[in-house]
Image 1 (cartoon, rainbow, N blue to C red):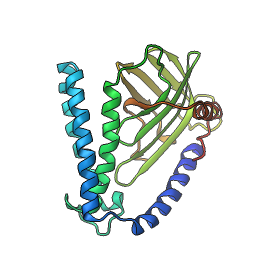
Image 2 (spheres, rainbow, N blue to C red):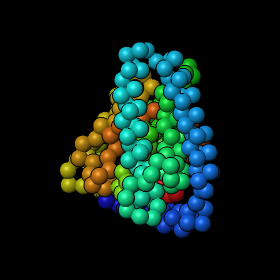
Image 3 (spheres, rainbow, N blue to C red):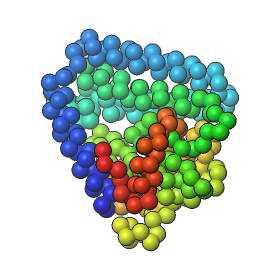
Image 4 (tube, one colour):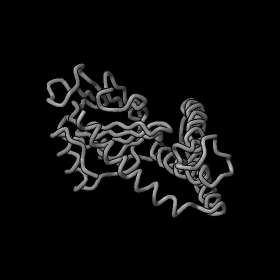
Length: 248
């Protein structure tokens, strides 16, 4: 489980440093409320754009997904363990820790919604950064019928993590990854399937537990939220070919 351990080590080190800094840089109530309001306004703008551009049937499905996301946001943002707040009970909805964390999660969701309705360029490919707005992220470089990819996730209030780098076969709109034959693979073959439906990339995994924590997962509906520079693409291709997650 070399890849997952490497990713977890980096993440935990960053979390320890971030926690220390957070104690010194906590938002005041006013600043936290202002950050939340800004993020909420941007989210509402993205939501209105989605309502305008998506077919009614697709938007109705999105409404169900959005309700689930709001529950997900509050579940995380009210958790002292996730936010680093003192105490054990759920945080109040007007607490600075909740507002600051909820604002950050809303920004991620706004990027996801914007990516969902963004018009692709005529020659645009699947290459780019994809997120699921629930803690999952994939960096993909499409080349000659292959997806060179790095997929990582941080799930839930206890921040269970996962990470995998590899090369998938790509026959647009379907991709398939297998770790069969890899030296660093687990006992059971792990697979990831990728299906591009419109602007969503549906990811489903099988036997992927070797690469992530008990409560983590790679499955989700991802959308492209940003591009990758030439330097970043080269880094992803190298990681995918070696199976080693890139250094942070």
